[in-house]
Image (cartoon, rainbow, N blue to C red):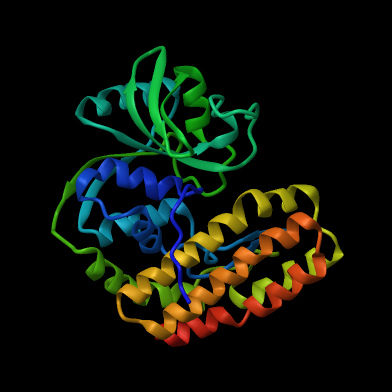
Amino acid sequence: MMHPYLGSGPYCYANSLAMVLGPAAPPPSVIEVLTGSPFGFQLLADRLPLFDPYGWDPDQGLDDAVAALGWTCRRQGADDDRQALAMLREAVKSGPILAGPVENGLLYHQPGMTAPIGADHFVVVLEADDELIRFHDPHGHPYATLPARDFLAAWRADTIAYRTTPYTMRDDFQRARTVSPENALLAALPGAVAWLRGRDLPVPSGTLGGGAGIERPACLITDGLKPEVHDQLVHFAVRVGARRLGDAAAALARLGCGEAAAVATRQARLVGGLQYDLVAGHSAAAAETLHRLAPTYEELAAALG
């Protein structure tokens, strides 16, 4: 049985987009599904498991969600701190700005953050001048502030592998057409199947996707995870992976896709069940869960296709 989750969690870009779209925005759970993030698995560099599709990243996912909902926006970057700050100061005169990716380890208002950690984040900038940036951080920090120099260092995102421009921001959101959440989700289903079955993308050495990719981290868990990989799983990847799949299940049920919703619910339960076993050091149980999860991605694609 499916019981949708409500609560906090690492949905930074979905929450940020909902904030900038305002009252016309669908719930962040719908936005997250529209980004395509629930529909796959990837293992990066033969070491980093992520419960999102191979070739997917939040920057691309945001563009897909904005378009699916019938909106347009301006996406731009800058060459250096001075240009970026001037761009930001001018843009916030017209309303909130979606900024990101930013380097989460350089957001010094968050306790424990002291240096780059290679983790991406997205925020909504409200005010900016030469000294101070004020922003909503969807990781539980409304109206947060940082000195401009510190915010710019994080926003440059030097350590974020998928960033395409330094100081990426989106503004000037305009509603080009009215699209209901249901119609946006329906239109996104072919893309979900494409993610699940692997798009025609080059595969770097050490990178695996989909169900086949899960067998490798199952072996890594059995052999013993490196501390940084273990921490990434228990502090982020499992949490967000289970939530994404739960939200996908709710969205599919909303569309009347009962079989697909049942598969996604089973996936969410499996991924969510990893948390205790990984924290408690039950390696064999966690590996067995991943083995059970592996075939479900093709099952979901078949149910949707």
